[in-house]
Every structure is written in C-alpha cells, then in structure tokens.
Image (spheres, chains in turn yellow, purple):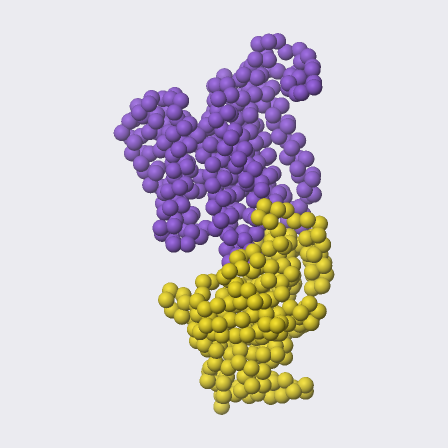
Length: 258
Length: 341
C-alpha cells in the first residue's frame, strides 16, 4: 500500500516557486528523509503534506485526496512535529499532549477519560510520563521534544511528519528521539517523512533519502545512492568524504580545505 | 511542579466569593438590612420555601426594587467584562487584550454622545445607541482587518482595532466639542455607572449576556488549542479563523451589552482574568468560567464601595475599579511570582 502519493506538488510564496513540481510515493510504514541545503524547500514540502500551505498539484494520504479530506479528517491521519513548536507559556506538559486529541473530538466536546488514558499511554511510551505536571517552558530541549512528539502521537496518526526533530538536541538526545520514532514505526506501522540536517543520522534511520535543491528533487533513492561526494559538493557546496561505518551505512565527514 | 490549587477548591472559592458579594451588595445602603433578614427574604422567593424575613414592606421593596436589580446588573456587567477580556486574551494570544480592543468602547462612546447631543441627556435611547455603536465598530474593525491583511490573522485584527478606535474617538471628541453643554453628561457616561431604575437594564442585557456566556464557556477547550498558534492549531484539525470569529462575536456581544447599560468601566476586563490566571494556571478551561464568576463578584463589591464610601453621594464605579484594582493586581502579581518562582 502507498501511504502518501504526491504528484506535481508546487508551492509559491508571493509568486516565487519554492517547491517546484515535486512527485513522491511513500509506501506504508516507510521512513523517507528529505535532505538538502537551507532553503531547498524541505519544510515547505512538509507543510504542504500537512495542508498548512496552499499548493498546486495533488497530495493523497492513504488513497484519499488531502484537499478533499477536510482539516479534521486529515489531522486524524497526519500529525506534525514542527521544527520550532509554539510553547504556550505556563502550560503543563500533560495539557499540551491532550491537545493532540483535538482531531478526535467534536467541535465543542470535552475530552473523556479515554482521551486522558491515551495521553497517559503515549507519554509512558515516550518516557515522559514523569513530566506530566511540569511546565512546558521549563523543560530541557530533549524533554520538550519528547512531549511534542507525544502530542503528535496522541493524534493516533498513520503518517508522522517531522521537521528537523533533532536540531536543538545534543547527540545523545538526537539518538534517543530517533530511536523512539523508529520504535513507533516498527510497532505501529507509522509512515514517517522527516527533514534532517545530519546526513549520517539520516542515512542510519531512513531507508530512502530525497535530496532537494531549490525546490526540485535532484536525487531520490537509498542512502548509498544519494549520498555521494559529487552530489553533496554540487548541491550543498560542501567538501565531504563518504566513509563506511562498521554496519556498512555511509558516514558523511566534512573535509577541511587545504 | 506546578503550584496550581485543585480546580474544585478554586471553583468553591469563586462561588463562595460571589455569594458573599451578593449578600453584601443587598445589605449595604442608606437603609441597612441584616444578613439574616436578606438571606431569609431571598430564600422566601425560592420555590417550595416560605419564610418570614421580618422585613417591613418598605424594606422589602428597597431590597427587591432598588438593590437587587443593581446587584444583578453589576453581576452581569462584571461577568461580561471579565469573561470577554479572558476570551480576547485567548483568541489574540495577547495578555494585554481587553474587551475594548476591537473598538467596542470607542463605538459605544460615539453612539452615546450622538444621542446625548441630539436627544438630550437621560434619553432612553442612550443604551441602544451605545450598543449599536459598539457592534458597528467591531464589524468595521473586522472588515478593515480583512481589507488590510487579506488573511485576518490575530495581529491584523488588533491593528485594525487600534486604527478604528482612534478614528471613532476622534469623531466622538469632535461631536462633543461642538456641543460643550453636554460634556458633563458624556463624561459621567464615560466614567461608568450602575445606576438603575428597576429591572429594565437587567432585562435589556440578560439575553445577550446569556448567549455570550454559554458560547464562551463552550469554547474554553478550543481557546487552549489556539494557544499553539494558527498553523499548529490547523494541523490539529481546528480552523483558527472560525474559532476566533465565533469567540470574538460572542465576547463583543457581551462587552457591547455591558457598555450599553453601564458605560465604560475600565480595568475589570484585564485585572480579573489575569488574577484568575495567576491563581488557576494558563488553561482557558479554568480561566473562562472562573473569570465570569470572579468578574461578577468583583464588580458587585466595587459597586458597594462606589455607593457607600461618600454616601449619600456616589463615586463613579470606573474610578473604584481602577483605584482598587490597580494595587490589588500588583499585590497578586507579587505573591504569585513568589509562589511560582
């Protein structure tokens, strides 16, 4: 089954195309990673997939057209972890995760015990149940990222969109968050599309990388096929060396200019 | 850990405070009535209860025809101002938002001034004109926000409100300066008062207040969803513009009705929701209902002060709310900071 089918996706800001004719198929339960230099359009593609920006072309989730689904139905399928989530000052972590139940509630309905139980389970699963009563704005970067991920998971989505989920974290917490996402993918068959800066991590977790440059897909395939010294020099302007780790996955190492 | 007290305790506190305020409001006045007598007289009016309060016919008439309408009106106006203030703060994610943000005050002021000038002071048309002016101002602000921003985000609406308010205030000042003989009348309207003649004002305001209060309380969860911003609220399946529209209409209706019957009473719409927020935490699930109750209690007590401090003369209630509210708010801010830091 195909979880996401994107064809001819074009997004323009003020008449300027920032994503141009992108087509992509993501199978159920896959992890696809968008890579590319700053401003390549990774975030915009993710925003279009969540229906947050107007676009031309078509996006289908699980066979139904995103635009025809309506916001509420779409938000039951797709959950988003933004790069820079809005942190409401003073809000308790559990109350924040509870917002993730919104797609399953009627317009004026209140949450039930069942919704609170789901929130609790999700927070347990992501090792953040002990943070439930804590204020969101007083959490560390790693703690907060787990809580934001918990809110997305409380939506019980089949597609998870992650925009740079590790950008504010140290290497240990980066690994922790990506391992949690990988666990969810295996356990629940969640389809994951993420943007990641760290190419080595991207190669380790995603089975497929999509390299964007100026809004256009310039390479699409396995990490081995996409991560070449030539491509990274052409599109990221980076001088790098591709090494192999013990398990054979590519490791991208910057090379200092002589 | 958060230092927010249990919701039940806060609800009981607010409810108890309101009940006490009501009894005090009914007791205090030139003819002093005892708390036992007041309670017995009120209980006597309840279904299935028959009590002899011991009040004379004249005292009972003072209670029911003079004090009770005024106390009930204070309750409605206080709840309307505090509730709509809380709603505006949630919808615009701006702690400085108050019920007058979108031009309600300026529109009502213009409407009232025009009627006072052309129909003479004390006209029965003043509340109606103020109400129409307030609603017209909000509608115009909404239209202006759309014309200016294309997308009606919270920010374009606030800016449109500022522009609309200064435009309408300029018009109001102009009309007033052309007719200096009514300045006193206009000024006393602007300072706000709860002077009533029987139950007329209560009947005028009740339908708007009731509809608005119900709508605001029903939207309390969605105000929490809006706290994560337009885009994220959208990815949670909510249409922020729709929620904002409904809440703004409901809040403006309550604010306009309050301004129409009581003039401009400042500060309540900011101080009460913030005090509630400091005590009950940032969730609008608690802030909205508690603000309605606390606002009602606060304004009833402020009115007791307004009519008893210089008795038999009255101080404008807007002066009391600002005079008492300002320092009280600073006190709450100080103690809450200490407790939460």
